[in-house]
Length: 493
Ligand code: NCD
Image (tube, rainbow, N blue to C red):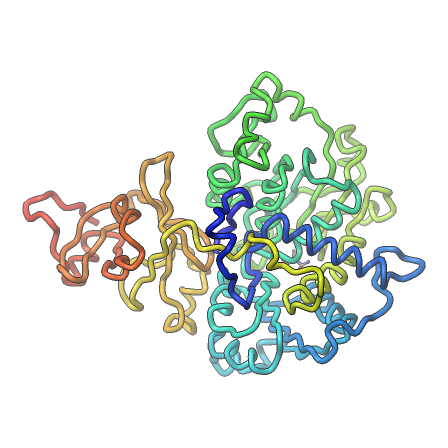
C-alpha cells in the first residue's frame, strides 16, 4: 500500500479499525511516527541490553519473544540481513527456522512462492523474506497469515536496511531535518537506496545523488520523489530550480506540503548547494541486476573525503563492500558503517517485537500511519489477458507465480500530464501512456473499447472489475472487443 503522509489522515480514517496483521514491504508502509516508535524501542533495548564496552552492540538477551518463531526465507545470498534478524529473534528469547538456500528447498522442485508462504505461515509467527524478483515480498504478504517483512526484493526496496540507516544517522546527528546526504554508486539497481531516498524525503533531508555513469535513480523513483514526496530539484551548478532529470542536481524536500513555501526561493538555493554534507552513503555495483558485469564505478577513498564539504560527513554503507569503499577509511573518525551494521540487531528486535505486539505501552497501531487504504483506485486484471507489468523482473512476470499473481495496478492520476498512469502494485514501476501503451479500456459487459484512462480513474472502485485494460487497440480487437464508436479512427499498434 502506498505511504500516506500523517497530515493526510481524516478523522474518519483515524477511527477506522486497523488490520491485525501488518506487513512491512516498503518503507512507505510505515508512517514517520511509527518509524520514531521503532527507534524509541530500539534505543530502549540498547540501553537495557548493550554490551558494557561497545555501546552500539547488543550483548545480552531478554525473554520478550519467548516461544515465538521467526522464519527466514531467503532466495538470495545474505549475511547481515538474515543473521541480524535471527540474532534479533534469539536476543528476544525466541527461535528461528531458516530456509537460506533455494537449491535445497522445494523452490528447486518448482514450488511457487505463494504456496511456500502459505505453508511457512503455519510454522512460524513472523517471516522475513528475500527474493530476486521485484514485488515478491508483496505477493508473499497476500498469501500469508502472519506478518511478512521484506528483507530485499530484487531492486525494489529494502525497508529494514533503511531503518538501520536512519537509526545510525539519528544516533549521530539527532534529527534528519535539514540534513544533506550524498548517495554514491548504483542508484538504479540498489534497493537499499530506493527505500532510503523515500525516507529521506519524508523526513525533510536534502539528497545529493552521485550516481555511477548510467546508474541514476530509476525514472519512477525520481518522479515519485518530485510528484508525491514534495521534493524539488535544484541544480548544483547554477543553484536554480530544475524541471527534472536530476543528474547534477539535489532533491530538496519540505516535510509537509504547506512547508514548501519554507524552501528557499531560487536566489537562496546557493546556500543549500554550499551546505556541508552530513553523510556520504556508498553502495556497491549491483552486478547481479545488470547484464554487464563490469562498469565504470566511483570509489570513495581518503582523497574524495578530503573535500572540505565532506569534512564532517559520516561515511555509511549498507555492506557488503567490494571495491567502491577504500579500506583505508575504516580508521577514519567519520566511518560508521560497522556501527550501522551492528544496529541491525536492536532495530530488528524493535520491529519484530512491535509487529508481534509484545510491548504493553508501545505499538505500531496506536498511530494511524502506514497501512492506509490506497490513495489510488486499484485495478485487478483477470489472469491471462490484458496489459502486463512493464518490468520484466517483476514477480508477476515469473512463470512460477503467474497463476497466483494477477496483474494489479494503482490507477494514478498524473496531474502534470493530465493523464493517468498505471503503477504495478507489486514492484511499483509505472506504465505511462506513450507510443507503446495507449491504454485501451475494454468494457467486458458491452464488449467495446475506448482510449485513455482518464475516465477510468473516476470509475467507482467496484466497477473497475468490469474493465480490462489493453496496451493497444490491436490487442483489444484480438481479444474480441470492438471500438466504441464505429468509424472513429482507431490507434494502431
Ligand atoms: C544490501 C542488499 O542486499 O540489498 N545488503 C544488505 O542487506 N545490507 C546491499 C547490497 O547487497 O549491496
